[in-house]
Length: 378
Length: 234
Image: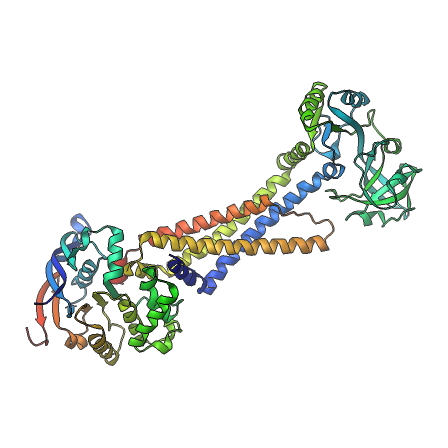
């Protein structure tokens, strides 16, 4: 059988123009599909950046919260209530909000301010310049060095700015796992300074971060929080909630889905059409093979092999091309958001298999019908 | 007493149904012997290609039987018929049907590859047959680089590489000039025909009639005349 498949391979690969068209069609489709889904994965990951960077196991919030940036402030008694639940090792408040800072040049810049619990600094970033303890200093803020850092005019330790008529001083530079989605620089300070500097509503706690005594305590903690009328989510659950919001309640998911389907249709059209032309051009040859003695199922194997080989090679090229573009774009474009993961690779692979399957079906249907007698008859 | 290679009995083939039914072959019976070069001749539409297809396991007759090597071929399953064609019959098609994307040697090796023989061994054996037809030096070229006469010889090499007992040539000189056609037939008769092989040729090229051992004339789906040996000898 290997010899017969090698025959199929040579018939396919030696027809260089058709083979190239098949590869280009499939690779282009895969490239677009991977790009679209990677961008979506990147958006989802960045949209969960607060959850990932803070690293709390359980997040307590108002049930109406959809994304970390749109928090609904919680009354202080909720914090006390959560702390009193059996199985809670500790619970701390977190402030997360937006503000405008006036830079030394006089221009205003939007920032996200994260206020960490004063006592524990739970959820603190990794400080790369300065000390974390300096956050307790007067007017102290730690700035995150990410793609948005230059928007604050590349501050150094000691750089000052104004925030709601308060003086702010950069006391440290930190790095985080993932930068945010909206292209806004991030400042860390203490919870109390945050609520003091930034105009607030009646309630000030954005989230309550909970550390359970053990994993087994989580269901109980969630139940008790729910009884209080609030919602406790694990980090994964919170990220899923954010994902759902972006997929179902914004146009992002739908648009990406439409683009992915269009990419699939384009790839399918090019590949299936090219393979069909390849089959039509070789129809007499397949008929001759039948006359010589190839069996119907062997012919089916040959066609399946040809489409699978072309599709998988195209898939490899498409993934390679996508990876290259994403790598280059990430290096050159500060806010570029794309992430290749197993899910979008798998999705692309399934799409390619469908393209191969449909192309095979079209080819096989045609070839199975050809009668060797037609070859004789001419 | 000659060994019978093919025995066709009361073969009937029609196309279409009802009023559109057209008989291509009408109750044809004949025998072809090993060591014999049998011609089937006749005008276009006389049924000679249909007859050839039925005796080579390509077209199922509506009635009648075909025995090859004492085996009733139309009693076989589809897979068995494919095996029969692969192992017992060698085809030289009118348009050769060589694969332009394969080398000449690979083209010749196709029947061996279909027999699941090792690729390299198949190519090696194909080279031996290319040597027989005088084209060993051109083995690595694609068929499109060869002349029509050379392509014909490649087709013959492909047809005989699997040692078939029955060799079928469909209008072998249709696309050849007179001299080349005669050279090919001379070559086939001297080098390919042997006592264990029967060659059946469908043609209407009178220039090559002289090479036949026996010639059956067909008209309107029937054998109207059988000529033996020299064409002038009935």
